[in-house]
Amino acid sequence: MRLIEKVWFKQHPAKWLLVPLLLPLTLLFWLISLMRRCGYRFGIIKSYTLSKPVIVVGNIGVGGNGKTPVVVYLIDKAKSLGLAPGVISRGYGGDAPTQPYLLNSDSTPAEAGDEPVLIYQRCKVPVAVGSNRIDSANRLIQQGCDVIISDDGLQHYRLKRDVEVIVVDGNRLFGNGLLLPAGPLREGTWRLTDAQLLIANGGDTKALKNEIPCFKDMLAMQLIATNVCNVKSGEILSLADFIASEVIFKNQDSNTDTIKNINAIAGIGDPQRFFDTLLALGFNLVGKKGFIDHKSYHQQDFEHYSDDLPLLMTEKDAVKCTGFAKNNWWYLPVDASFTQEDENAFVSMLSTLKSID
Image (tube, rainbow, N blue to C red; front, side, top):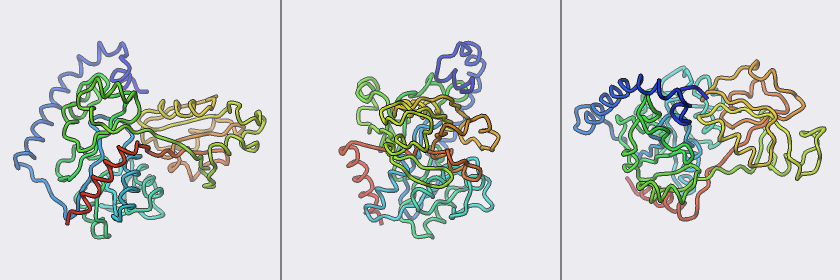
């Protein structure tokens, strides 16, 4: 974790030096943001309404809060209701050959960014990336999409939206509560009350609802893992079969109840969340390394990992490692899980959008 993130989220002693130094920039950031929001609200800056409904999935802070699993969940629910969803994204970390860029089976994270490639490969729906989200969305509408899901872009007010879904990390919450760069927030916590759906990813649901007023009606999301996939071959094993495999865990006790030794890496907003998931599943992390979010991997990043132990990573990491993956590299796909009551909230929202002409 970078020093500034420790200051934001871990109350690092360096906060006494860095926060006062950064507060003038935070004030400037606040003033610019306020002027920009007012510009859109009063029509000084033009915003655009699309011919099809738009759902924006975003957050008020920096870093990974669990937006991508929510996008995947929304896609599946929309398809189950007979909708034809498409996804737009900025394509962070990619350098697309054209703008907007419509992903295809040969698209790489270097072109489109890791999360758009993950969504395209997982969901098999049209995905367009580009700096101009209006153009990207219109490209998807031309492809026959009748609902547009924006992966991030909560602060992209140029694009009018029908529904806002805000995802909050239920464990890290809002860090020190300050705006960038003194804190991790792009907008204040007041922004949460504007969301049609507010989702907490993990954390103590009961405590959050009691302690944070705007969380009273929040939806509680848990990320669940049931399978493990081989990065190189694409082979899919259930977690139970993976743990019980004598080939994968050679020279380790074959008893399925025995804790298995692995190596692990994660290049996401909060790598420790992934490592905690692996620990909860009963793995022993002999070696682990957290990288920056959207890390662009190279083979030399993995040279010190032994071939004797399986290496586990996130699905977002895996899409960037297929070209040089080894046989013992695996990734752990996760799915968003909600209670039936919360699931009904998604269905109700999507059904309303379906009725929009």
